[in-house]
Length: 210
Image 1 (cartoon, helix red, strand yellow):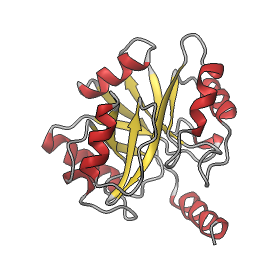
Image 2 (cartoon, one colour):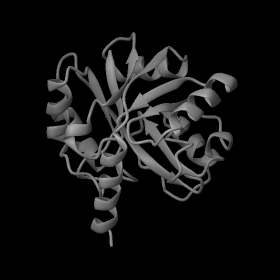
Image 3 (spheres, one colour):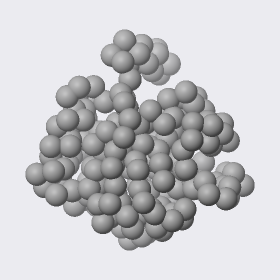
Image 4 (cartoon, one colour):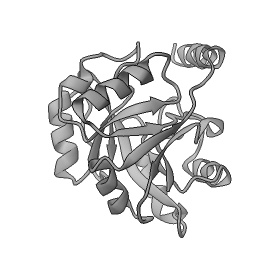
């Protein structure tokens, strides 16, 4: 299965794609699933059951702001507070039976200690919005420390969904996907945004939140 594990919707303050449009875009691009990972909210979860289709999996999740960086929580049903330490955030994710992923841990805009501050189930080794060489550093860290690698687009608009994704040999069920991630039976595929596009998106975000 090809699954984009990092997708934002209009439930994020900077998301421009509805959950419904995100699903439609992912299916059109040939993906087999997406994870809804809005910033510090699970509001998009209410649309999952309505939009789920045979063979296409929608994973409930969130991107939680810890004290030392962003953590993608997959398979959670209750919101985890922002502002906790990475270790406590990961612990709360696992208490819900979820999977904790260090999101873009070596991005220039992230705190580089994040990956070292908790026992993550996986590291985002390919984030489509990460600037060189942060993905390369993340993959090297994961290989040295024997941590599973996943990929995600970190899409904030529909057109970016599927730029990066995770390939998993699994059943089309959330529990099967999460189990394979924990066991490291994954590979990250895709590309990153060209630098001019990245800079333009960053400028738009800055102006939007002035």
